[in-house]
Structure formats: structure tokens, C-alpha cells
Amino acid sequence: MKEKIEKWLKPVLFTAGGALVGLAYYYFVGCPTGACPLTSNPFITMTYMGFIGWLLSGIFGKGCSGSCNTQ
Image (cartoon, rainbow, N blue to C red):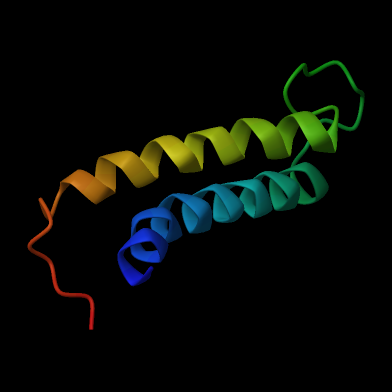
């Protein structure tokens, strides 16, 4: 059970973090005119940034090759 949690924890955290960054980007930078396709809708921005976070979790997850001790 612990191995299963550890396997999915990093992608979930990176995806959630990416979505939060997307939401913050929408509210603080965003596109007030609505002409920008990625930043005119908070759902699209959160989905896009969540996907980027998910991709980054795979990249950073491979860096240790399973030998990194995070404790």
C-alpha cells in the first residue's frame, strides 16, 4: 500500500500545483479582454497548467532513478 501511495503522490502533487499556478496566473496576469485562448477561462488555464505539472512530475521523477531518499 505504501509503495502505491508513493508512486502516485508526486504526479498528483505536481498536477495540483500546476493547476493552482494556472489559477493564480488567471487571476493575477490573465487576459482581461478575453482574446487570449489559454488565459481567458480559468478552467482552461488550470487544465493546461495541471497538464504541464503532470509532465514535469514525470521528468523530475526520473531524475533520481529510484535512488533518492526523501526522508
